Image (cartoon, rainbow, N blue to C red; front, side, top):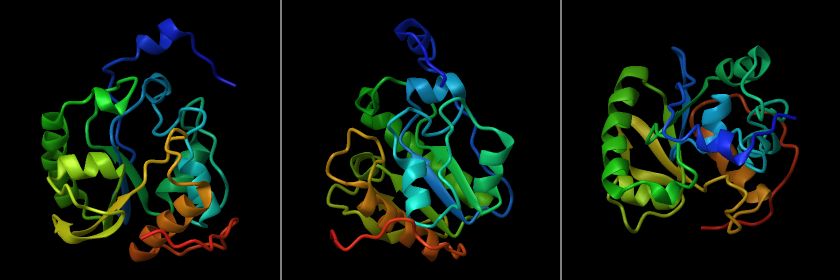
Length: 201
């Protein structure tokens, strides 16, 4: 497995990570900003322990659990892009923690995201990180799930952060919510590999 020293990770601070997107995207996931590991390997949600790809597979959004800890390869890119899934960030600046970002950066990121959405025209935009969503879009009372407003014509969702540090949501609930957003985007869903019986509001 790829590994980095603390110094090597710190060297990735402030790096940008390219958007993963192509024409025809239907479901656009939006991270808060790249972590240092993600920036080092240039692949979204790559840090070991992040549950993003586990949740996609568990929810039947993709056919197998992707391992991008060492970066994207052609198979993992195709597994997402061929399904109509894209990934971008609110802020494209790598930090060790999302709470290092200033509120003004998140609000600028929301405006930049709106321009991307207008250009790419996905059906659903899913921001993964409810706290960052509330700040970026000035919606302090927003709750997880489909939002009442749209973003440049796209349906807007706020979903839980898949970081392993987010103990409020276990993998079953992440899988259910990510599957719901994918269904709203019109993706052809696969059989989930894990089932959820809870219904968090």
